[in-house]
Image (cartoon, rainbow, N blue to C red):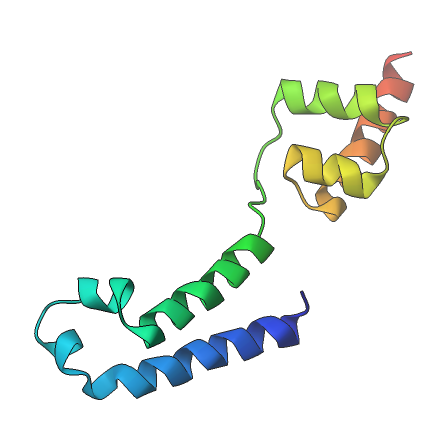
Amino acid sequence: MTREEKKQIRLQILQLLDKCAGCEERHNGTQSVCVISCPIGKQMQQLSVLLSKESPRIKRGKWTEEEEFYLWQHKDIFDISELAARLERSELSVSAKLRQLEKKNVLSC
């Protein structure tokens, strides 16, 4: 999903929020009705699911020894994008770590 598509979904959610701003149920403290029976609430849930499915969790920070071992052992089996998905890391991070590991292995030989 492109940035523009995500932006459009967020704008749709904002428009739906504007529609329900005057809703009696929302202001009477019974927001559970919004989730259960309100068509606007259901639409917002569906749109938010689209966004959450499209945003995979990407790890940041220090690599563990297990991640480095997995990456090194599978570098010839999977391409960068598959390794990134399996390790929940960005492709850029995986590429950089592979270069670092290759330098480390060359120097230790």
